[in-house]
Length: 127
Length: 363
Image (tube, chains in turn yellow, green):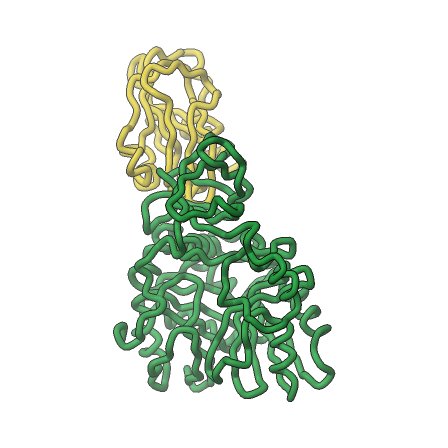
């Protein structure tokens, strides 16, 4: 499942923009591939992230995976509920399973991300 | 890559498939945690047709197996199952297996899939000439029905009363007009059965169990369930280079003479010991991770690790050096992504499993 209202990275994160701030999460495809998510390590509030760079870790019962920031910016808030209930990412990857919020979004970088149609095609090509 | 007779059932259930022991096996259907919890709380079925089955009979079968297996064979009653190792001369483990005593000199053995062919050759090379052995793996299907609801499901599907089969015992029954073997064994810690039949009949049993409410469970849940119980997985906790004494499974190591017993007793099981570890937090340790004291001295290695769905935190098994095996001691585990703190624990790590309970309480 892919949502039309946001943009996507090749490492299966999504960015939902609102002005120069944004919410970041992982896609439905990513949560399904990982299986039951049991642990997340997220960047701390105030951390400056660079697009495409490692910014955390996601572990599931069967795998561990690095998390890459789909956009540059400063972390303004992290989803603290995931510390004890990371399964929210499996249940609702585009909603309650959001990971963190960013401010100071870079316009040019954001435009380079895939829209829903392009990400859908990217998933097809990877399958 | 081989497929079990149930392969098409897994595809129809949208299972995620991966290779295990030379077979394309279901890793999960819906989710590992869901299947794990269904096994602890209700009932699940596992396709275990990949495992190997052998039969042995003849006047010297008992004596032969007594020499080939680490566990006592002569003291087994007819109708009893017993866990034990097949060891090499150096005391390493060629495989772990469960032996069924079918008659005075008649036995049935279940072994791992990846080691089946090697086991059969090794055992055959160590039998008397008049011991007749057969590799039944291709013609034998096996489904594990596990969990507190499994006795009710089993009783409903079998044509004869299932009776009071005790833990680690077996009986024969009739299912859809054919004779089948049922044992009170499994790899989950929960009360349940291993069902043996022809491949054709197993297809029906699979469907009948699903219709009766059992959840299909894959190798992912099988692994988290066995890890919570501290059960070894061949290739992780046990292998040909690891002395069987270190496993700490003293009941699987008889006081008799058997192949490898000299090396096992000479070692004494002191140098290393397999220990359970309760990890603080949810992060997983992996096979090969180094275990150290809080001061940083290397004292062992992790063999298996996972998040424990039943306990809500990570757990592991690992070999710890002599002098560092104290239950309650705190150790550090070095992972690729930082250090984890853990407490050495007795096994099982999960203590509420129903496996050894009386069947009557679940009917």
